[in-house]
Length: 159
Image 1 (cartoon, rainbow, N blue to C red):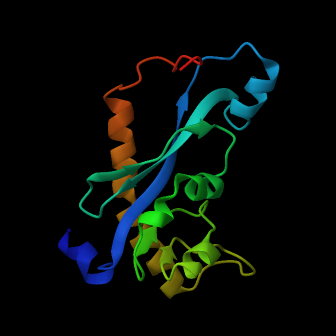
Image 2 (cartoon, rainbow, N blue to C red):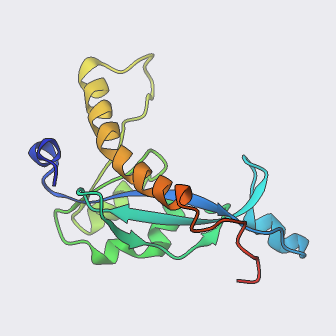
């Protein structure tokens, strides 16, 4: 584990993020609606990748339809079954599942939201930057999958 990471995040077991893979457009309109990612106007499958603080990929979820939320995908992936009490998982703002983590005595660490104020105070800004600086490692792992073109073309829908 990198030294700067270890000093503040020694209980962190995984850093997670979701990514999408384009798929061929299905023939059935009903299937198209499930897989359609409305923001990007593409059909896709979505999966979650978890890495260890060292950067090693340690968890890959099954792929689900592209319209699934990060929260739903995390719960369906059953990663929580692999965690031990007091483990910490880092994620982005899309993973709003603190209650589920409290049930298993674990902690979810993610950047804070700007709720009822105009801007963050200094301590919240610093904390958000620290979390974002660490979370970039999972973004790099995901980019390696996409850069090295494990999936050169859209995934055939029949798979």
